[in-house]
Amino acid sequence: MEPLSFAILKSLTPDDVEVEFFDERLEEIPTDTRTDLVALTVETYTARRSYQIATEFRRRGVPVVMGGYHPSFLPDEALNFADSVVVGDAEGIWPGVVEDARLGQLKEIYQQSEFASLDSVRPDRSVFKGKKYAPIGMIQYGRGCKYNCDFCSIRAFYGASLRQRPVGAVVEEIRRVGRKHVFFVDDNIFVDVPKAKEFFEALIPLNISWSCQVSIDVTNDPELMELMRRSGCMTALVGFESLNRSNLQQMKKSWNLKHHDYQKSIDILRRAGIMIYGMFVFGYDEDTPESFDETVQFAIKNKFSLANFNPLTPTPKAPLFDRLRSEGRLIHDRWWLDENYRYGHATFHPRNMTAQQLTEGCFRARKKFNTYRSIASRLWRPRTNLRSPLRLGVYLLSNFVSRREIHSKQGSMLGAAEPKIELPSTAFDSTSTPIVELQTRGSTS
Image (cartoon, rainbow, N blue to C red; front, top):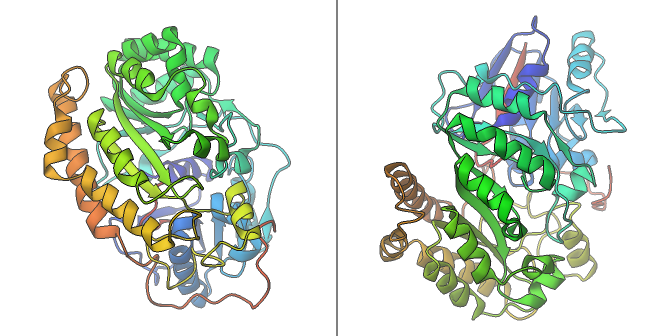
């Protein structure tokens, strides 16, 4: 899908600056290209590859600036491979970075004391022209989440800040993009109920279908559910996380079951005609080797259109990372840079199973949910998965792509074997705080 952050950067770049954009998922990055500045948006899973790319450009004398979640959390780490780091959002900062680059006076850290308003956000998608992305409009309405789950970095990045763009501006952007299906990239589109209702009401005349990420407590508001149905909500990514109440309490997500049990919430979503993409995580203290099969059966029984079964993975600044580190349970000091770490593998020692059992259990769960037999059995849900030819197509395509990716990614290295990533031998501190724009392979942002 289109990496929306680069369309935002393009919109913030002065008109007299020539911009080229490369996405390694679709094309090779020409590290020998002539340019004055390179910009990379980095998440934890792409940190190693981003550092490798940055190293290649800096060897040629090209300055590199990094932004995104990972450099914002670990700017000292990123500055081993970049000349500058943008901490936090780019709005209000990026034009100054470009001007300093013109003058050859880049600062190491760019950060503002408060988050900028989203009122003027106008993504410039011209950088995506000619690239073969999925035919889905990527739209952002707001940023931030009202919850502070143990494993999640969103609250660490945005704090308690909850910001939405003007509804009229988002509606106009949807019209301008011209896609019949839209994905709202908000981490949780249900963070402000009155504003969400206003937004969904404004979507009704557009006659689009849309997908989103949402917390399950959305099912406690019948009016909101009706507005989601009427405005064209087709798929909701829902973080169920665990079937175990003690696990939910440990991850600070016991509110998942505050209003309804899971079955009632699923039935409410289904009556609204919303396809469910269920997200589950394994490795909390009450999980055992038996937890995987129980959860997969639950997802298959409820005919989720998609589901993911992830090993619990500590990321910098999330409370989970600090807790596991203080308990001496991390397998790698920095798994995102360790050349021995492989995608899908456990990064810490669970309480009631081995790390190998966690790795194997998640992979087994993914494979079991995505067998051809499971795909066929989950299809037969007339109100959701079979409601229209579009939904049938989305269901089949997404399931077959998911099946392929599960087998191709498991056990793969993050980044490339070369060049080697070396850091100064200092103690790790998770609390330290024309242009070419690059998207790294494997990014999900």
